[in-house]
Length: 99
Image (cartoon, rainbow, N blue to C red; front, side):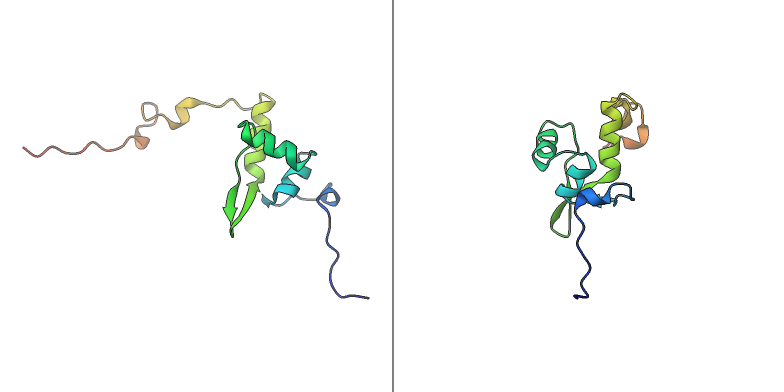
């Protein structure tokens, strides 16, 4: 017998805690879909784009959960979150004039 651990497929992760960062295959399994479907949803802007971790594209579980909540209408995107008009701390400081 080999001492190497058996590799689990993403489908066998169901019922267990999902990782914070997921490969494309694991993220697709988390969504119970295919890699092609995930790529399509990312290209449409429905699902988040991956971040690059150690040179590999990885999906954040929190970002996927937020995208799903938006699809379900649980969380509405609010344009004011990034607006300097509503959040003065986001405004760029004006350059001082020297007369």
